[in-house]
Image: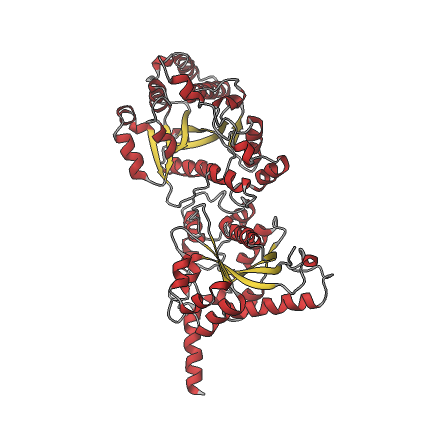
Length: 264
Length: 275
């Protein structure tokens, strides 16, 4: 039996709020990667974006973290990490990936006895330090095309150094997004496309819409998360207006950095 | 509208529930929101009625498992309950009969709850007796609780499948009770109603609920995934996923059950119809 490469899946996103569909991404990805025969998925990390991201309707990170924790209580391999959400400014995806990769490597180097974080499962079955891949939905691949949202070097690093596991979503064809990007195409070996046959469009956006209108969201997210939302009265007409006139941080940050280099 | 002016509704979902999924459960939530949003109704209960083994559908596993899974799935719901009556009958029971059974129970319960309102009591008695006669399906009382069949568009359209439904049963279901149909495609549902005389006649009793957010968790897909050892987590409630694993349900073998058998309604209805 050949030795499988250990793998940790990292999902970055707003998780505003986390839904069953988010959690299903991990399960689908794990199944797919195991079936290739090459990998052993040893952990999953949910990393909610910081408040600095400036997305419209984004509720406080402390709530999004708390909700994700409640949702993942019943998972024995996926956990929430608040490092990204704690950073003072919005953090580029690749920076978050570098952080987690470094942390996982350090844990591995300190011996397999350590029992902390998501990289504890099946460690003894594998011979090398776990790799880290970005887990995302098909819509995420399309963001690489948006001008000013990603630095070219970063796309190169995410796809080349780390790798992507992308789950299809509705009618979106991730193959096309890969095809239309030179960088992604070059790293096709590092990009795993997972088909979700169950058409399920229950997005966080729809959940927020239902909540604003006083409609039921039961069975779309765990009961514990729904309870939390009601207890803290999150997701109202007002909360959706937050950051309405604010530019998404990635755009302003790229501009700032550009200006800085011009000044230097 | 005052709360006491609202018409009480009980939603009844009949089906294989083989197994129950989050989509089935969502249908109840969507239906309740829709009806209460009209300002005319208050949905007081949801009933899941799993079909009996006598239905002879391909891949249908034992009723006891399907009922147990539905019970686990509705554990956290304060208004949706599972009823095992239909599943326990030795032969397959027509949906209209299931509805009659539940409506009688509903009316009896209402009667027992009532105080000394003799006029209302008398009206309820009359209603009960009226329902003993299948032919008087048109006599529907406006007060008192209403029982509605909750279903997807596939059931609505199955009304058109030859020999699957008795014409008088369809008339009874939409005439006496009512339908709440959850569908992604409102146009198709309305068109289907438009093209059917009996459905068109009782169109006021047919509520078409648009499901704006696609949520196609079919039990067929779930069974397929389970056969292939693939994940079904977050498609069904966790306790149901555990139950399936513990009991080793849904294999290639279980999917072959009833493979050579004719579906009970088709078996019963081909040939001269019996009332």
